Length: 119
Image 1: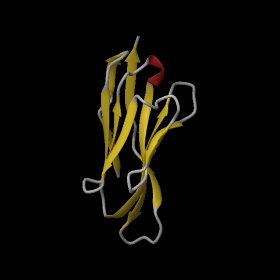
Image 2: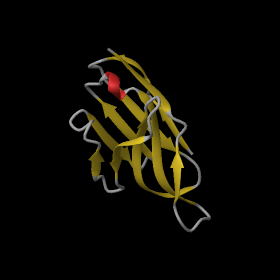
Image 3: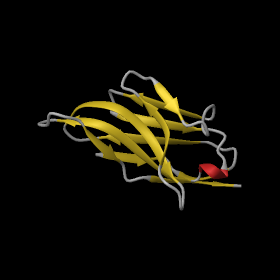
C-alpha cells in the first residue's frame, strides 16, 4: 500500500527528492515518516510528520532534509539537499493507515528505495 520512488545515485553535495504514495481503501492516514538503513546498520528514523504537518528530524539531517506531505494525494515526500556519502542507504516510507472495514490503524512500510551518494 506504500510505494516509494525517487532514489538513485548522486554525487556528494547533490539533491534528491523521494516520494511515497499510499493506495488502497484508505479511511485516514496518521503520522508518516521516512527511515533509512545503511549496510550493516539498523534502520533509523530520518524524519517524521504528523497529519497536521508537525515535523521532526534526526540530528544528522537537520537543515539539509525537508519532509512534507499532501493529504489529498495520500503522499509524503523527502527533499534531500547537501547529500553526504553517509546518507547512503535504503530509504523506507512508513505510515499509520486506517483502512476501510477495520477499527484501528495499522503500521505500513514501503518496499524501500536505494539512495547512493558518491564522494
